[in-house]
Image 1 (cartoon, helix red, strand yellow):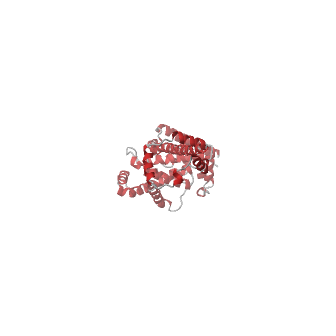
Image 2 (tube, each protein chain N blue to C red; image 1 turned 60 degrees about the vertical axis):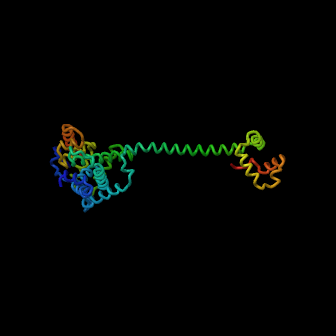
Image 3 (cartoon, rainbow over the protein chains, first blue to last red; image 1 turned 90 degrees about the horizontal axis):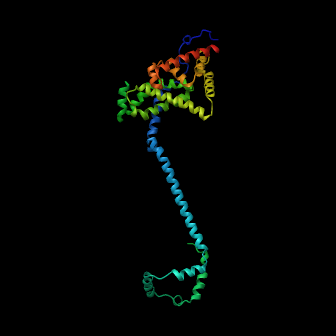
Length: 144
Length: 179
């Protein structure tokens, strides 16, 4: 029990705690190990902290941009596949007969074709046979 | 080795490690005991002491020599202690009283204090002080720092520190009378 007129100066001043034996001999080495480990940790931790903080949203933005770009590219590709697959054969035939006009380069190719020995059945093909051929290739199921 | 010489050697790459090793040897006990009295547990004090010196290593190039090296290191140690105690409260969503109770439990079960009831009561009375007042009390009573040095470390006026220490002593004497 403490006295009623107790003063702090009545208690002998001493450090009541202890450390494990040899602790202060080992501590400098442990600190040096931590500092050298930090030195070898690479360039990023040593970067000026505000710079690291500024880099973080930029990197995030870049990741989002790349993600959106690839996502939209794949979606466009799918759309093209779906749309082409949905076009009926007759419309493709109409398109080819209306818009697929011959150009000078095609004539140039025709000259080279003329020099080749093409089978007679290919050159003398009738319109009906051509349509039958198209039907045979099942345009609806072709992949592009 | 004088601080000035240590700093000069630290600035030269070829003697940097040697100078830092000597700096740690020179200040390790003061830093450790300052921290240990605040966090009580040896493992926590050990971890924080190492962290303090790692920060000293990282920032020593920026140290302005208009302050004393000793008070600068002491300030880093003080900030580490306060951050540690705050993070402990945040981590476990503990109110201040629960952290104090945890530290008191460590004092109570400490084998170093077994059999010394007066010291145990004194340590528990000190733990009942608010954190910053406890810092002021430890720095004045145990470390015997000058108020001017404490003012530099804590960024508080000498007058406020004197008043804080005086109140801390009165509170401790009251706590001891109650027990």
